[in-house]
Image (cartoon, rainbow, N blue to C red):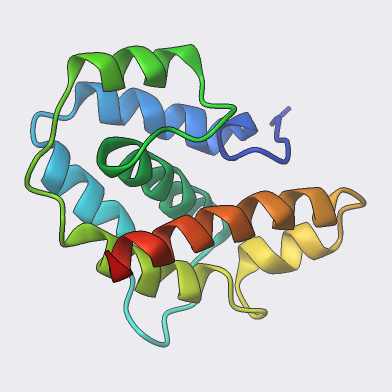
Length: 136
């Protein structure tokens, strides 16, 4: 049985993705691959969750980690640097717009949940921080 919660890494898909991040040899390329969605693309649920997780990592690397990150990610962040990702917030923001569109599977799934408002609040905060990084 899959588990999920209102925070990004309370989802099994995100925690599985985190294991891939930890094993990735090229952090920049790995993150870029996970935030690159084409305009008009209709990403599935897992793609949306992974995009959110990658955005969390980009924010943590460029700015500071948001609350609720798993210890494994905090440990990874303490041991890893990625200086060449200053262009990723703009790409991430474009993909966030696709993932958070009303027609995306992630949004459709969450809208049916009773804790949608709590999830949406956290996602809106993530999107706001990403917007600030783009404008910086």
